[in-house]
Length: 336
Picture 1 (tube, rainbow, N blue to C red):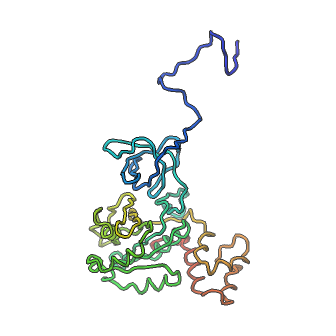
Picture 2: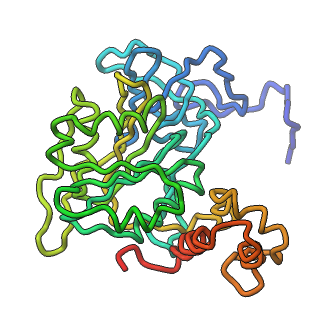
């Protein structure tokens, strides 16, 4: 039997034709040095809406990106038809390095993490003070996810005309989280919009909240030209709203600059992906006290050096309590 090397030059060697009639595949990928830069505004069934300069371009992910997916807020490189005209389609060939990520899992036992938003500066945690009742454990989980992902948390407490915000504000006072309290009547009249705009000025802010808390109504008031369907019904038995926002969407704030990203309402916020060692970074007054902690310290055990650090007057005991409450959120259900 005759055997040939990789480059046979005999005339009787049969070469299998390419049935598709296209060029043979190569491992050399184009560099796309002329690709345009853009920002992903929304993702819908494999199609991505990308802002390129001042044009809205529809795009799809290039095959060479493999399983790497782009999410709302990603900075991407785009090639192809960038005119933004109807029925045109571009390709996303690169996804830029992310400065922050908001991630969650379905529950604490789920190993699959989902990146919800990329490159946001802040996470606005929207909570109704009544109808539906506030869920502090869910707030805790969102705060932890913000700290872990490199976002600054903000509390937005809605429907203050139905209940007082004092109890929740007292719970989170030691975390020094910026907050705004809104009521349905005053916010609709615009009296409280200035405070919200001040918190969002020049920032990319992702909004997250339980269904029915008024999150999309709030976004509609901030970006009225981009009206979205609101949650018009809260179940009287379960206290849960009906999901009306089905995909994350980035919207520009024309008056103050920056962006708001409206996300679908959540009923759970798993933290299986969270590295507990990153949560301490949100407590700069406590972090120096961890130097003498035993290796792998969870900061909630008898040998933790933070107890002595606080006892010596280096930090407020309530701050240590807040840290340990947040670290313990992975052990509790959101609806406890």
